[in-house]
Image (cartoon, rainbow, N blue to C red; front, top):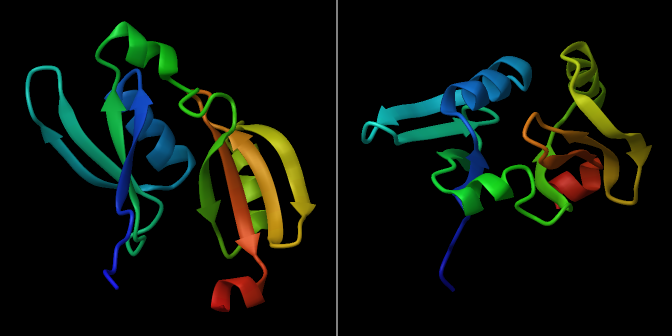
Length: 136
């Protein structure tokens, strides 16, 4: 069987620098790459940690259809799922940075979870999986 992984996906944003600022300074993501491709286009990649297997390409909206999809790439559903090994610390970081919490921490069958909204309107699940799920 062929081994495959999703290594990157795009999030449409209105402004590169605003997005970099939010994700790196408030969510503590790492800026992996910021390369100028043209006068109006950059290749901007962020990641939740240096060893994360999947990165996010910050794609600046280039037309009205893309502008209209900012913050609503999934029609109002949770868009991104972030695993953590310390949900309480993640939650307190969001509170201290005045990030909108949509649903407080709850216990589900798969682990602890809360939902937040980033500055562009994207919904994120932050999940601390139960150890048996993480290991197996």
